[in-house]
Image (cartoon, rainbow, N blue to C red; front, top):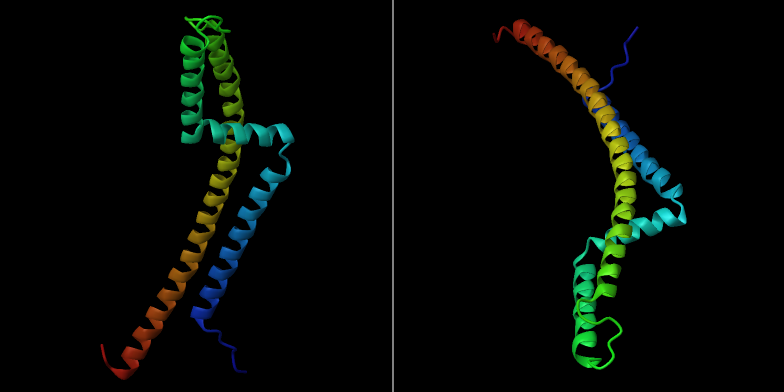
Length: 157
């Protein structure tokens, strides 16, 4: 009875291809899971965190502050709505900081949870890779033994 042989290279390539496919699908599912369950306020906090940490926000905020000072110190000299020392402006700055900080923290917490899930999946993938490497190593050892047998038969060693 003839034994059916399968090329070891094809076995390893099939295994690696299947594992890569599994990892890609799993990562897509993680991203879908975290995008799907976002409420409107969660999306808003993500947008605020993204915008609040950008140069566009910083430059526009500086422009608003400079405009506020110019308007109240030089344009509305006779009847400014927020005269120097700009107490109303300080109130708005404090409110911005007080609201922006927890909103950014909420967005970072969600990102940290998503990243932790991805790290755990990466560890799982690494373990699968180790199993694949172990199988490849076993195949190489078998091939090495076969090559040694062939060498002995041909009296090359």
